[in-house]
Length: 327
Image (tube, rainbow, N blue to C red):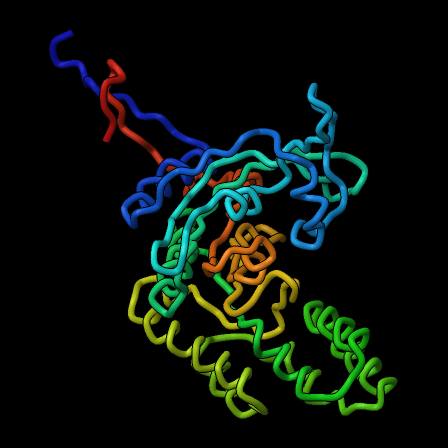
């Protein structure tokens, strides 16, 4: 019809808009889509329960007698199948549904994830790229977001410099992660060590410049010094960008020490109680598979993003009526 507008507007849900927009961003940086099988051999997950954070996986016996699992994780599949080396890196992103126990612990849930993985030689350039993309992922969804950065070597370096049993070491790491100052003091006293410095870790949170300055004063060894230096270098690059204002440092953040090393991070969106993004370096996980390359990546939990309902967070696309193109 003459004069009729040939375009129509489509309002997408937050998770749909995020997926569409982020695919273009990731591909611009050279990441290619990874598609995994719905089923994997159960042994892949049984041998890496700590990485999953759960022992509960949906399993069944295949027609050939193999015990299979309905995918609870994508990163382990990527680690298993990558041919990347330090000299020849591989860059992946994925959009997958995984199946894990829900927060009640009584049922399984289908969880939508979008993630990104860099596998190869890991230096400041690669770390900054992935951390920057994590921050950009959050700000693409909403400007009211925060990316919290940490470094595994800071907390582990501090505890490693103090003689203690492995049981006490692991217990203190858990208390640090939970920001439980009273618990840290109590466990330290029982172990016969001074817990005041350790109890100060949960307080090392806030704007990067101030927190890194305070963290430098607590350095007691090479690992802690390296952790601060690496974060300072990454921060010096990020603060020159538009996403710098959305970055915080939290030295109480610690992941599983058998799988993760170096930089780790979590992302939050205002109004949502749980983190919507999590990631970090997992070169130790690569070593468990006999892989020599390093790795760093993150996952965005689209189920959490779907909880954003405000009008301001919706993305409007203009699409040609014939469906042949979009803008």
